[in-house]
Image 1 (cartoon, rainbow, N blue to C red):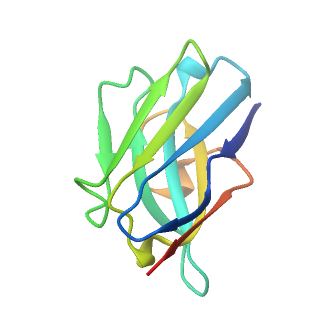
Image 2 (spheres, one colour):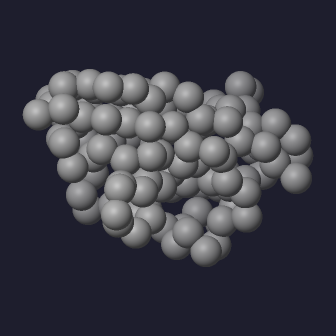
Length: 122
């Protein structure tokens, strides 16, 4: 079992930046690939980024490429999502999740956090 807790969300103006964190506890964090997903009001859950357990491989949705960066610190059992050049359409609840192989498919993920709200004002 892995417990995940997101933090770092908030209200930011368009063009601004936020860094989300996801702290993991439970089984060995470094064995898991991690992903970030988001759900905007009235929309389906969307994949944002994923990172392999070593951090050597990263994946991004086209909508965030060049603006968002996923990273991890296995010594701190934490994965991060640095979000720059934020747009109003990035407004959503952001979730982190854990799996065994980094993918962009939500159904591949076994463990989920509760989410953190990100609101980007225009």
